[in-house]
Image: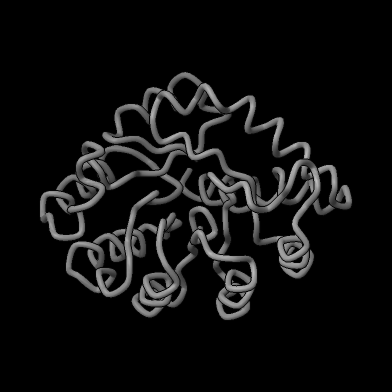
Length: 217
């Protein structure tokens, strides 16, 4: 589920591979918006314009932390997602995730990078929110070589339907690492039981992301 700053890059990818790309709308016109978007009313206008013109499965990935989730701009983002029943792809701490669910209890949230939290904390949050999923983008701590870390293995076993591999290709340069990242992922996934490896490797993403995309058709 790629996104870009601005959204034109995502639309070009979708046009090239409509059977592969599940688009989401990043609320950034340029990468410079990453740090200040939560207080920029122009972001709201940008989101409204793109949502009126194109179809998306979700909004994100966006960076949002703590009490900033209750600022007017992020709250409008949540409202727009709620109006269209879109997935929220949040690069956030636990505090912000909790506030997002408080604003929209029925939200479906994909936690980017599993919040960069340890697996024990990730499990704790997943127990509290049935509509929270976690991607493993830009993480290497889930495995040492081709051996899955014990704490992560326990998390995967407890929540086999809530994790998915990710690549975090947020800049063109990062596309060069897709193949090495895929090799790394295949290596540690092979250390899990095949049904679980399939879920984390692709089935969970297909269920959550493609399901969200097809609902918009």
